[in-house]
Amino acid sequence: MALENKLGIKNSAELAREEERISKKKAIELFENGILDKLECGKFSSLKIIHKYLFDDIYYFAGEIRNVNIAKGNFRFAPLMYLEAAIENIDKMPQSNFDQIIEKYVEMNIAHPFREGNGRSTRIWLDCILKKEIGKVIDWSKVDKEDYLLAMERSPIRDIEIKYILKNALTNKIYSREIYMKGIDHSYYYEGYNIFNANQL
Image 1 (cartoon, rainbow, N blue to C red):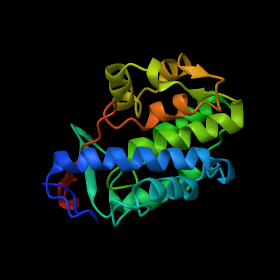
Image 2 (cartoon, rainbow, N blue to C red):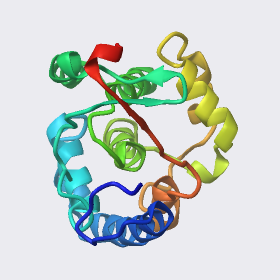
Image 3 (cartoon, rainbow, N blue to C red):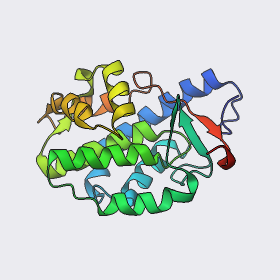
């Protein structure tokens, strides 16, 4: 079953295609219109703006904190009852160097604040922080899909792997639209979640 959406699409594969097409178009607008440069990098308020801009034409919940518990594979993201507190703590985390920035990114991934589209919006959010703080961004074309997904799955316990993978993919081409768009490629980093009830925690 497809998520409830503004497009009236019932087929999940069709929705995924439309979601990718529309979110990529909106991501280009974010970049070219200089909207990202005006955001307070590293704050959840900025991530909400990014998410709403990308998905507002598709989902009613764009830019809104999720109201369901979600899991991916065997990993359960932050439970609803702790989600707002987790976001407040992430906002306070330092971001003055690469290690601190990736630690913040890992924590936001664990929080997974939105029902859908966390990966795409959070990768743009990450690049905003890196660009502002250290003058670099991630070239996602240099990041192996499987290595990335496994490292992110292990990152709550051991973040050295994801730091190594992303550090090796850093580039100073911070004004390249092509580099930027690699992070929004939905087909490269598939996002799919299971919903579960609070009493299953």
